[in-house]
Image (cartoon, rainbow, N blue to C red; front, side):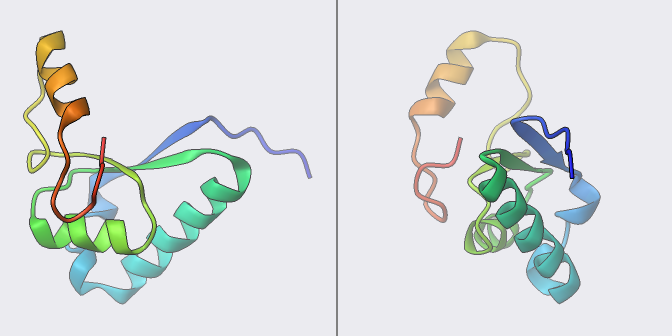
Length: 95
């Protein structure tokens, strides 16, 4: 089966919001993370707004994320460099 898979895929925030309390969302997220891993791709968890959501996506194997918890949107490249160098407590290196 031929698949077209981009190296980075985003999991919409509607699937991340409340993921720590929803076994169905956790199962979907884990399946997407494993699917991406097997294809050499990355799933980005969009809309991480709480420590609980960050811990949940980290636990199920997602290694990239974005959301207000991690940093406000900006076009200033100095902010990007600062975020890249930070270590997030619940996820180790999460950028």
